[in-house]
Length: 448
Image (cartoon, rainbow, N blue to C red; front, top):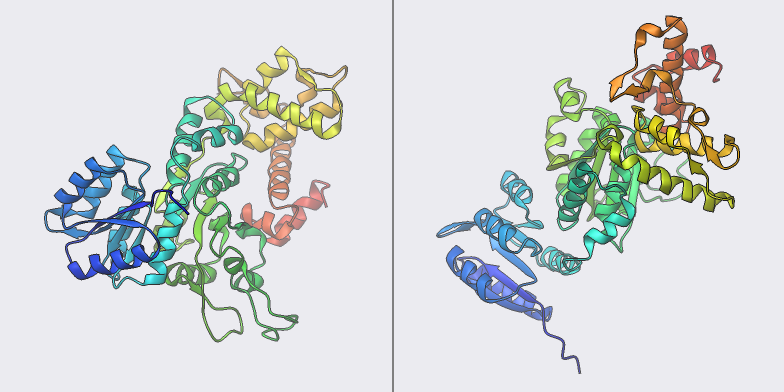
């Protein structure tokens, strides 16, 4: 006989019919329900009882659901709250998510969606276990990293779309994975996609799938990325690289929570949480009319900024030690030691490629160093990005401007190629070059 206590749900709504519908549905899910007709009754119940989930209407006789969300955020921040809003009140729902709500439902309430939301909320990890798990994966004790961990902890307990901003190589995909892994969808797929690496003519098929015979080469039915991420998380990396035509289709899929495969006649319902990232300034892309404003507002419900390595220089030593331990384990060689001058050189380097560049620098130095000691010269850092007390190096010491500019061009092109897994078309798009111009530069620099 199962004697474990039933989980408790607080229902807040002034309409008796809605309360009864929710009570009956949740009762059949073996959950214990408590009901309140207004904000005052809800606050009184929250003082007396411990709840596992709160469902609240937006409009209450003595206040709003947003006030209740804020009240709970202050007193019980790990209690998930779902907002019930009128159909089409998207702005209200987004405000609720920004205030800290877990998710939202629209009236009339669809029971399958209600049961899905409740089950998802009750799968959230209990308070206390999140930060430790995040600290093991996200290294660094600097204030920017401590703040980032707190934000990940909070966002993992929400279903709100998150726009992760930050420079290339700063760890945006790792942050997205942590949000997914610490949330209620952790056991479901995490599907990352580099939007800049998909040829434009294949995008619709890649995102939404296709039916056999829908175009030349479609020899069988194929599900798309949305279907692959069903019940999980779809991470759209470099989302600013999506062409405008695809942005329209993506917006519709997010709004309707359904997709239609190429050549298909019917839509397929999909339940995905959308996380996105780009190294570009997405707001500037909107102003330049290269990114749709309506899609921007749907993706950027909450913005999470990942700090650059320059902003957390105190973390460089811990990161370097971690990378060297991993390299020793991967190669089966003794762990290399970082000479004090080499560590100082790393701390005085600007790292335009951030953590990814630090890993590449150490991997190269690990291979080249003598006697398992990495000296400053083994790092082979670009002088143009070396700093003195955080300032740029003196560019007046450059002997040949053409050679210097060529070295900068080479570095940027190599970085773009590495980030796109040597997809030349995607790398050209990232650098805002035509493919012909990219091909010319590769040939000129001997990289062809």
